[in-house]
Image (cartoon, rainbow, N blue to C red):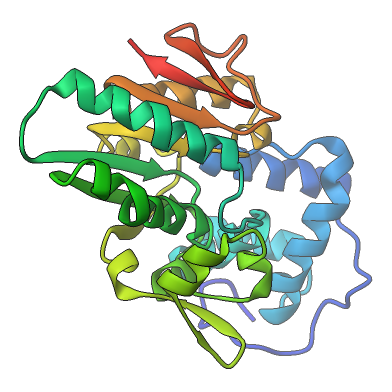
Length: 293
């Protein structure tokens, strides 16, 4: 197959083919330029395995051919979507990082509402960055339906879920999940906000109406400038894949996306130490958040 021709499946590189150190370096640089994600030297095997599946499927003979396709092929835009799916890890479930949701419901939202005053109608905008297959975004919507709207009858919630992978976004938009995703789900939520069909759990429409999903590369400056006026951002277990320079850029973009008095959640294994001094650290039971003063 010549680069730039329609993508077809044909026998080519075997599963045992190895990626050279030089090609690993070139692919790593390409990934970094596109996403800010940095693959350490000890992750060569991981990249080799994931990219190797695409190389075989496309009927290419070498990793070099695949890199050329990504850079110059006439259908590079289409292949980049598969490429992002291959290099990103999407592992999540409903009510993951529950202390964050507790702080969101019991402290952050009351703080934001109190600061705004007693206006009858209020809009709360929440961004689930790197939302994967949508469990986090749907969890936030369910918390609103179950608890927040009772306490704040005039509160209107808008949740935006974004991810670089179109594959997981398709799952998020469908709102159809398996046992793994709902394993931590409180029973009252499971009974009230899901329909069960053939072993699958289908998110009900009243939840889905509160959430919209969009493709977003957190390293894309132009795209990130469109993300504004959020009150709370959840960006968990993402920064661990960036080097320091990329973290600084992404966190700066997240800061700009927040309203004054807004909050940022990151993963438990992550920290803004040495990355940003623009936020004020706020402590909550079993978790922390970063506040934009």
